[in-house]
Image (cartoon, rainbow, N blue to C red; front, side):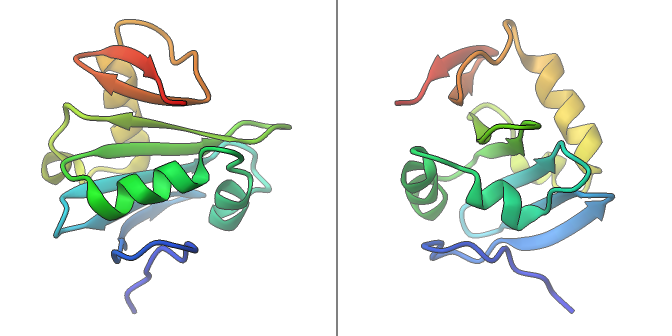
Length: 131
């Protein structure tokens, strides 16, 4: 059975490709976008990560509905709200069948500086603040 990412406001279908532990990969072929959901806290679920996205939620949903060729890491930090980073310089189709942990490792290795913003965009390894 195909699992679709159940998010309010999401107009495009993001299909689950891989789940390992609590981490999930969801992909939209039309836009060539890949989402890696990483609930860091062992008690958290996809719904917890989504529901704990404060302030930047609407902007992310708009991006997921309209922009293409992105890899998004969406994660919830223990004891606080969720964060996300949007990577513009990866080909989602090249990563989509990797495990979530391998994708996250590639994203981290690509950074030239730490993710220091709650909502970030990454291009050429540089981190930019979103709102």
